[in-house]
Image (cartoon, rainbow, N blue to C red; front, side, top):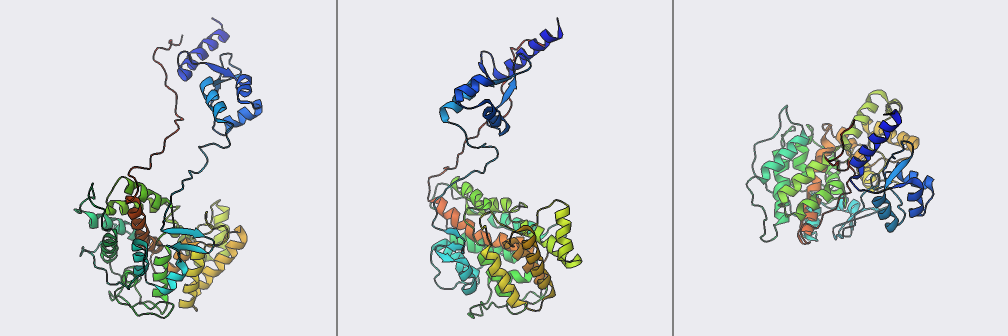
Length: 434
């Protein structure tokens, strides 16, 4: 048997595996004609992942699955590959909306709330829809402090969240859970379970609008777990503002995951643990830690050298730009402004501002809230994971609000279908290669 004949026989067997017995194929010209496009356009669909082509029996031309071509022809010309595009989902919510002016919680601008209300006030707004009377001194479980050399703050938050929910009843098919009660208990428990590194005395909070001071706030209790020093005037207000600004951000990745979990009727504690898992990603909650590394480098070698080093390494500058805010992240502007008021003579903050200005000019992107959280962690002498810790605790408020809303929807409504792109079934009846 000639080499050509052997190759032809081999291709026949391979195509049987690829297409299956009796599966019809089309040539490129036949496929293009059926779809009403040029042959060049057909191959463009292949390069974009919309079609698969295989070597035809002649060993030189391409073959296309006739059923795939027929399906695309009936659907109309495809515009983009589902492999590369984002999954767009629209969910109705009465909790949060995004705009160029900033995030609005139930119609109220979060940057205004950050100056006029405690984090507890804003959490109640998210859960109940009203600001109501100020409620502080949330009480959680008395858990032994979590920490030590094996755990950083991010791990400690996740362990505390898991422990807080241990033994608590799943909502099952009963009445909707008390989400607000769960939120108060869970946030207080996590905060108080983190190891104390300051003097243990919770500082009193005075808000930027002058109201206060307030005792036993989450911001004050969290400060003693994040910083070894007593807060300078205004720094505790900046931490409280960070908690408020990070409480929710519409359908961020972790919030979508939370709603999916709630749609299965997972209990509120399990819902929060779902959110914490997604938040740990380097492109989500952990982004502030990467921004902190950039700031630390700038404090060591100067902003210009730090930026050049990252650019030469082919890295994107962490802490700049945002998918939602095309101009500037209003949350970052609000938090950085409060930091400047709280620490007007800070050398570190001066370097941070210079870093932000130079980077924005170089890459055309303004600092985002991850950069602002990292800046706060430096000025407040917090650990590298301080910003991520603040975001983790703050976002519990928003997650539970979304979970509560999702409990009111039909269960299991998130069931997307997958488009299988793996190897086709190979029939065992194919002839052996000779």
